[in-house]
Amino acid sequence: TIACESSIGTWTDIKTLSRSIIRKLKPHVFSINQNTNIIKIAYPINLFERGNIPQLLSSIAGNIFGMKILKSLRLEDIKFPPTYTSAFKGPKYGVRGVRNLLRIRERPILGTIVKPKLGLSAKQHAKVAYNAWVGGIDAVKDDENLTSMAFNHFKDRVAATLSKRDKAEKKTGEKKVYFPNVTAETGEMIRRAEYVRRLGGEYIMVDIITCGWSSVQALRDAELGLIIHAHRAGHGLFTELREQGMSMLVVAKLARLVGVDQLHVGAIVGKMKGGAREVEHIGEEITDAFVKSSDSDHILAQNWKGIEPVFPVCSGGLHPGLVGSLMKHMGHDIIIQAGGGIHGHPDGTTSGARAMRQ
Ligand code: CAP
Ligand code: MG
Image 1 (cartoon, rainbow, N blue to C red):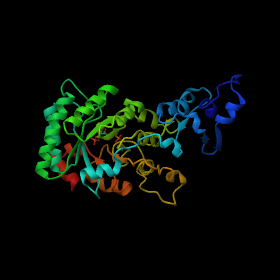
Image 2 (cartoon, protein in one colour):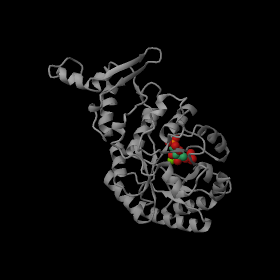
Image 3 (tube, rainbow, N blue to C red):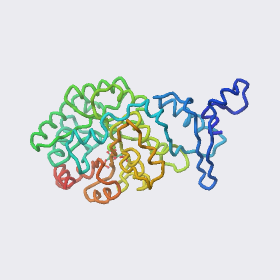
Image 4 (cartoon, rainbow, N blue to C red):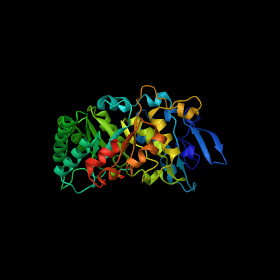
């Protein structure tokens, strides 16, 4: 039923379905494991429009999730052939581009989220950002629900914060970056991104789940010359339950296809859910960093030709005391972010940033 509803079938035999359609487009259920309840289905490539994520999801993660015949269903993974991945641009910058811009070769990139999430004025926001940068943080970002607010307009905040970035660079002699949250209706989002570019920003941040795949793809395809930081707020709506929904691994693969440069994947030791195995696995899949012959072809299959790796972001409840154990799991090719773990330092943001850098 899953294969059928997701491709050419429906609940009953239909006179309009010819033998030739069946021959060309029928799916193949090639593995059913009755112990694990894992089912693997192969679909002919012509069932899918190249470059169209909504069409892919309407097919294999569409009607079938609402059908009475299934008690529960979870989409755990998708493997794409090169003919499918090649229709997408993927990240413009990815791990390489970010490291080149920041001129940081070995260590993890350090970021902070300005806190409180909401409430500071544009000027106060810029000041907190400055304090974090001069303490040793590389990147400052807006929080996921900070867009253009009555008390903190997007344009004012970007102008004030980028001007503080210039000052922080001058003071420290290091490259500093700011990820303004452009999340909004697609047209407005692109206009906000263009504004960031005009003011000399190199980055934007977007909430990929709440904006939606086509909106994020439009942002990437606008070719604005900006690095895209992807926040995943809301993914838990469908990734949390073990027996229902869609895995974060699938989200990460789709995010890589549409072309975000860095993506929140979980922090294992922090405040958010997500076990070590799951988070490490997502990290491996989007960076291609650990392509080992001892691993299953599953990981090797991720070596998408011509598509840059995504930089994994570990965030949520982190503080200096957790950096060691986080890096034991994730290695050094990560972006580590701490909000509360920096601004909660008893001596304030600059000391928190310094502690994090140390
Ligand atoms: C972290 C954060 C991020 C979470 C999201 C927050 O702040 O800004 O949104 O990291 O989770 O608001 O919680 P703290 P994930 O450092 O103060 O926790 O990265 O798992 O998507
Ligand atoms: Mg946040």
